[in-house]
Image (cartoon, rainbow, N blue to C red; front, side, top):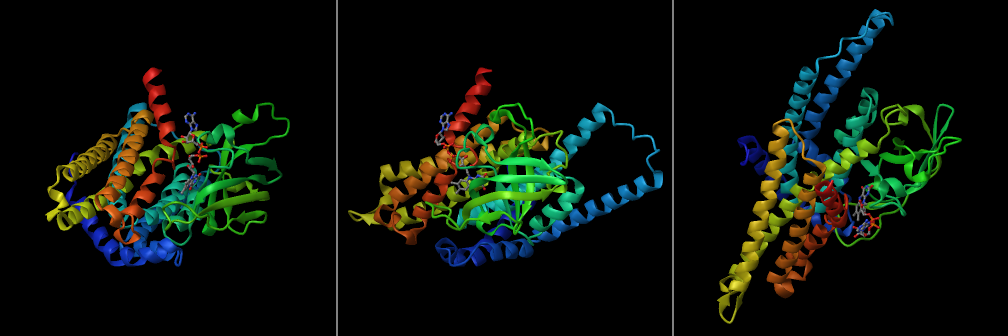
Length: 427
Ligand SMILES: Cc1cc2nc3c(=O)[nH]c(=O)nc-3n(C[C@H](O)[C@H](O)[C@H](O)COP(=O)(O)OP(=O)(O)OC[C@H]3O[C@@H](n4cnc5c(N)ncnc54)[C@H](O)[C@@H]3O)c2cc1C
């Protein structure tokens, strides 16, 4: 699979039209904070049929849950448990599911690419709600949790936020985590603070990671089990800070979440069991985020290339278009090469998934490290090609450059990806 399917091409063209028509004209106001991205996110989901498709899946899930409950009630507790499927059958089922997910993800990726070509910050806000918060609930939640909390996020009714990072826990998110969940009768009490959280100022549903603070716990804080909890906006003791001012990605509000003696009921524990902790679930989210950032890179690269090529053809110095100078041509050619490389990596991700496999942790880190770095470098070169105009907001590339920089920090900074890759190579 090293070319786009007809469906992917069609979805890309449709998304490009939508982005040109709706996202482009709104971008100035989104960037200045005059308007928030959420109304437009809802419009996107409705216009492109995303919410309808998501809701159809939830209807099936609802139906399956209802049937299971009925069966259980009919059989009482006396029925013999279902014979587990053979390992081969289980493996085939897993591979089939991965393939199906790969197809859906590829469609999502071409959409993200087209939206990022116009405004990567908007995609960050959308992705943090649907892929991070919604995705975490879908991956680890019980059917009831999926229906109650993931459904409204994935059908555009509610905004989600995914809270891992803390003031003292960034790259070392697990060991540095200080937010605590103390078990009490019928639930848990959460105390702590989350920082740099996308959508936090306006989030309706938050996935909050916390360390279990059982009485008499002997494990050192670094090694205490981590669990995820759903906290709804307005829960007593929860304060959402105002949007912070940042370098780029201005279309996505970022903020802090303060939790002071926040009581959440037992059913707010993601997965509803303390037996499997959420470290692996969070790692899966990180893993997906690493390859999930590639469409943003491609969108930024596409736009930087378009703007640079047009500008180089038009702008003359010493009576000749700057496109005729080899130093400028070298910059353009480099942008073209890295764009091809990022796209090929993206194809590799899809190809592996379509064969029922995932990328290894080191491969996913390599994808993120390479794509984020070359995208930031290319955006910086685009500014250079445009000279003084590149430095002006009117020409877009300075915004894309600021937006691109986040990709080297969020979801695990470059240095952390390098550590992962080297560790895998040396183990
Ligand atoms: C705009 C934005 C949106 C975000 N959205 C979210 C969100 O929705 N949810 C969420 O949970 N988080 C979010 N984050 C947080 C993001 O994931 C963290 O910023 C990131 O993981 C880095 O953590 P840190 O900022 O604490 O940097 P630090 O961990 O303090 O790192 C500082 C520097 O030291 C380097 N470093 C750290 N340890 C090592 C080491 N062992 N060896 C070599 N170098 C090292 C890092 O690579 C980095 O260069 C967001 C961040 C931003 C900026």
